[in-house]
Picture 1 (cartoon, rainbow, N blue to C red):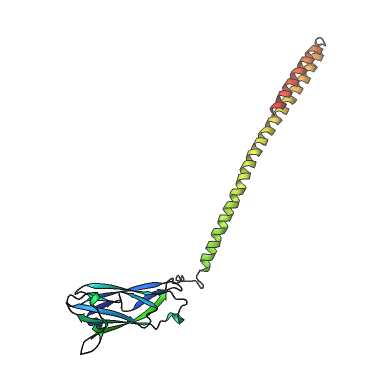
Picture 2 (cartoon, one colour):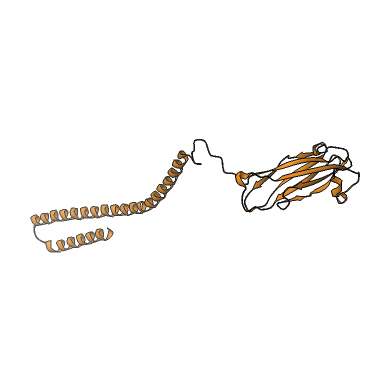
Amino acid sequence: MSTGDLLSIQPTELKFPFEVKKQSSCSLQLTNKTDKYVAFKVKTTNPKKYCVRPNAGIVLPGTTCDVTVTMQAQKEAPPDMQCKDKFLLQSVVAPDGVTPKDITPEMFNKEDGKVVGEFKLRVVYFPANPPSPVPEGSDEGSSPRASVLDNGNQNTSLFDAVSRSLEEPKEKSSEAWSMISKLTEEKTSALQQSQKLHRELDLFIKELSKNGGGGFSLLFVVLCGLLGILVGYFIRKT
């Protein structure tokens, strides 16, 4: 008779996520498939390495009992992640109304024709932090295309940053050039006005000379004063 005849055991292997210097645990679910009380006991070939809670107990008819197995932190990983440790789950029909406190080692002795069920569980380790799967088309975890794209993105970001830093002085320089151009146009306009006044004044003087010299000195002084005022105004404006 095997324990499987009395109890349903899930899973059938003890799988521990293994990481050096870290404790790990896994659990078992024992389900009573009979209409009788079933006592169980868990043994291991390496009791100092594992802690089982509970390591013995009673499973009532049609109910489930959870068993937690904790592996102590290990200093190093075994070769090829292979483990030789084994567990043995023993089970036996118990009297109705029995409690875990009533369980004794003698209950699991194979004497006087007593039937004791046994189920062996092996230990399996798997990496606690498995490496990420390598994408298709990549030789060493990252594709050349992805690397090129990453470099392209970095170069684009750098170009944008430099462009922004250059655009700000350009905007200020553009404003300055616009102001200089405006002042130059105003200065040119003022010079043209001054030259026009000079030409008109020369014509006026010639006309006065033809008509006679009377009152020439006073009028000349007045016109020269007006010309000076206009020239000074335009120069100050520019």
